Length: 181
Image (cartoon, rainbow, N blue to C red; front, side):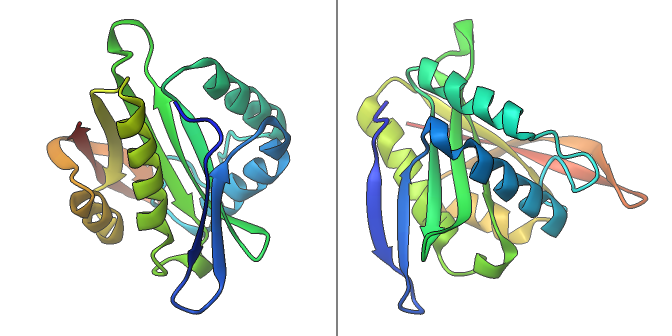
């Protein structure tokens, strides 16, 4: 897949958004972003209390994506500050025609269209590359903004994990979604 993507977009508030491929040198900023997002929202599979994304883990993860031909990680910057990311992680062996999609954006930048721009960039790169047949993701059933974004991008619900996540004393369903090229 195209590993050297770079795009610039003007946001509604006039600031410049840069979307670019993550490099091995981004592991520290990537770790900080994931920790911040985990602390700001319950819409991820981890929170501040159990975020597994140490700098070493992020370094290893970004390197592993480089070794998978149909994987990528894109970072979103506003005024040189890392505000979001999206990754396509190609599944192994007989499932290599599918990649799992993950995305997060800091709360201060939600609702600005950054999620859609990240989704479009990642999906366009995967479409051009032609190695993937499908993308998959899981999203909290209570994450209305996420469900809206994924549906607008062409993802379809195909099932649910009932009561699969436990947050602050309550069980939450996770919605399973796929996109087919």
